[in-house]
Image (cartoon, rainbow, N blue to C red):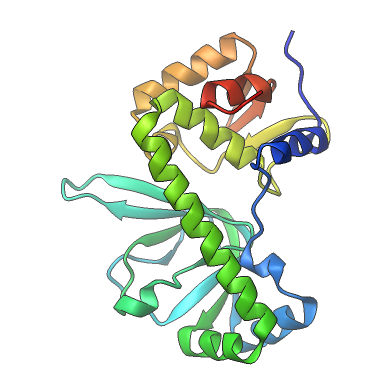
Length: 241
């Protein structure tokens, strides 16, 4: 019978395969650096569903996600809304818009979000003044581009179910998504969102979750998926046991 792992055991196992929780930019800063950066901006709280910024708006500042999750959304030429990414865990969003001068995607709160809002000019000056913060920022961006490249490679050679399994493991490996007794993903996402992130159809997501639930790999609840057998999901995703 499948059993739930403790979060600590699960994360230790994930780290053996290079899938440990990524560090966000905010957590890479020292306490004094966080204090200085906080003084350059303003802390704002966004309720669930609120837009932090909207695609096409002028871009004047970055958002540092201190708590909570956001969805990065775009609209296709057919008018269909797509979830491009899920951000949280001290991530920065809106930093690339400085090059274009306008927002290239909509950022929407998935649950309550607390974000530090800092103007692009002040943020750039901060990085120029603090070498450690500048190095942390480069490390953060390098990891993000590496993750994006890995995602694109997966999409070219895996099935929708494999990508969904990897996505659930990835989400469960991030801080703030588990507790002592079970490994679970508290989902700020609908099945349509999961399908978009995994690059597959909602029918595939529904079918895969139902299959894994019957086999005891997962339990599902209201916006929550408890991973009972991460090893089984890892095999599905194509990771070594």
